[in-house]
Amino acid sequence: MNGKYNNNMTRNLIVRGFDDEIHSQLGDQSKRKGVSINSIVKDAVDQWLKRQNEIPKRHHLLLYDNQESIQRLIKSLDKMTRDDEWFKCFVRSSNTSITDLLEKLEWFDGTIVPYKPSQQDKMKHIKQILQNISQHSNEKEICLVDFLVNDIASSSITEAIHLEKEYDKNRLEGLVFCAYEMNNLFNASTSEMIEMFESHDQVFILNNDQIFKLHLTKENIHKLFLS
Image (tube, rainbow, N blue to C red):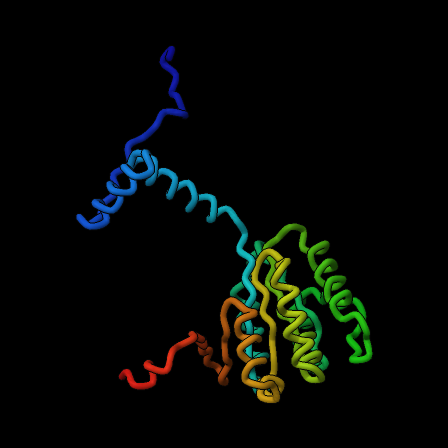
């Protein structure tokens, strides 16, 4: 080796915390697959490291019932994303006070032209907006608050759900919050409401200065009798 340090040399890694049952299961899988336990653990570590280097594509639902709640959240998001790693942007609301706040905080307005309910191809309009945001992001991780879907939901919750599902097929890199007024969802049927929830990774409800996360799980009738 001529006295030089070899960066490619392997290192021993001691993994603690495996109980006998997990170790036994690993042994069984190792024999069944014909690979060593060392290879299984190394593959798991490689996959974990790979995921850490990938920019997440998260798509969340925000529900609010007053301007103060959503404005308070926007200010908090702005503080949380003050470093240069984030590209803060929004799609404007028909509520001018919310738009004024975001402009004051110097968030990028991804809106191309104001939304009109009479627009025929709403998906094309949204794709143009997302493309505009992506082109201006300079490959930074995106933090987007979208109010356009709320305006669409005010006239057609069915169309809003369709657009949410279409967006889900080709997400932006980063955090996308779809902000809806509660009243728009209250006008939806139960099936539509569940579809809306399932079109997002997580559902958050704003209550003044508090944030609640809603967990939605499908259950059978027996759960009604369990404590």
